[in-house]
Image (tube, rainbow, N blue to C red; front, top):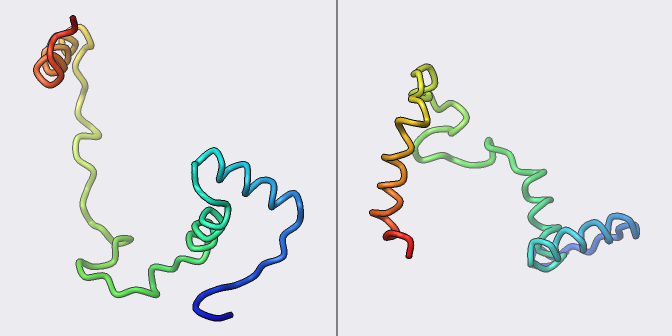
Length: 90
């Protein structure tokens, strides 16, 4: 293994699945295989986290217990925001 290169022998089924998924994603099969292996072997403990370990984020999700508003009340505001952002439809 030189410069991070590694040759793997895969069965036809695995090669076919990688090629099919990579084509759907618009990337090379080798790139997808590298991404999958990177994700599989990633370990948070292998890194020093500048702002602390993201697994121990103590921030509480906000608004999960708030009651929502009826769609009939929200829809006009939503459509006005769309018109303001993208312009009125022709």
